[in-house]
Figure (cartoon, chains in turn yellow, brown):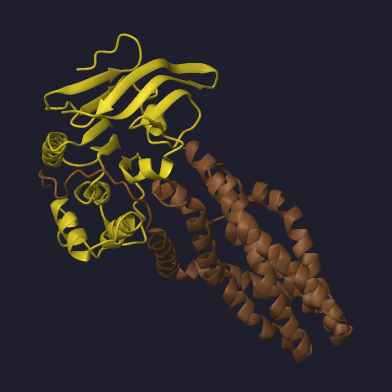
Length: 211
Length: 241
């Protein structure tokens, strides 16, 4: 059973008077994994930011469970997890403070859960280190640890696998597959080769080989 | 990394939890301020320096200082607030926290108000607490010093609230420091006029309630309207990212 979570109708976006994409129609249902593919500069990030409700500069309609996103914004945001290029890990806070703070903005943060999520993300022993002292990959893991705390049905991940090692990418892919099986929906961009089945691909740009 | 999800997929229906989010916003602001406490010293040192250089640069006569003192303190406070506001959202914008903040399922205006209140406590309150000491240095009478502190307590929150709108609008621009100052200065002038006006009235033995009431009216307006403008400005800035 799949129910439509997010629906895009005739999305059209221009940048500097140059059309990035137009006439995009798609429905993302629960239990679906979507990959936005295309060469650099084609507007993948722009599209994801439009879908996350961060960028209102587009034409067309964006519906969350049949309601326009701008009208049910709070409800939409409660059901959305968005990870952008800069994931909002503050360098003067520790890994724990970063994750617990992120969680507290949504639902009450339970310390044990936050610690468990950090351990899941491979950060055991680094919980109380300021993020400034973590490597780029570890900082990324602090952001990715949110995936273990999120009950949101829709995940939008923009280049989420950047800077993490190959083993972690494989495990993240398995996590996404499990998540989709559990009824979540995932929209992502990545330049990694996804070893997953049943991925729906939305290709931006002409003649790009999306494999 | 673990490949099993920990939390089941759940559609969130009810809203709420903004008090918790507001408390978290304040807590985070203070925690970061505490970790970078040397940055908090900058506006403070700047403020004290301006006030103490005036007697050296212009005239150390008690008569002159008594007259110009309140104005000097007000201008110095205004300038140091203007300078520190430039950094208000800068780091959060750079590391992407602002994006997550805007995307949190809470009323953004309320969070912005909490944030500005937290910033006022960490950057402006210490400055106001220093004023009694500076008042002695400027040969102001204890009564005048008290009125000065009072006007600053009512007036500086307006400066921070209004300045935060400008900071939110310009955070995505490079080299926005001068722009922010140019945008904000006209809005600061009325606060300055009524702030110093109250102190001048007190020095001359006139009633200060009129000036204070106007400052209070500005504060009420700013508390209600500025958070909405800050939230709107933040959404615009984040959409440029």
